[in-house]
Length: 86
Image (cartoon, helix red, strand yellow):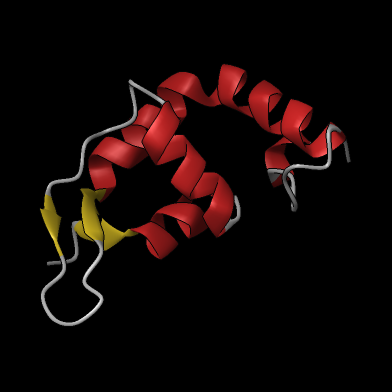
């Protein structure tokens, strides 16, 4: 189902690293809940692509500032490209 994406695809969609994606999913109460699990060994959570994109659009301004703070503290690399001035 192309509308269901895994955590790696979520991190690519949001343009953040995988560890940051995990922190985001675990710590952001407003992040869309998983809609299912991947079948098979090592099956991970699946998220609705549209819900993730909608969340990102709504929270982009605050989200980028959180990413910038984490990058400055050395906790996150690479920083979201949209946060750079260039």
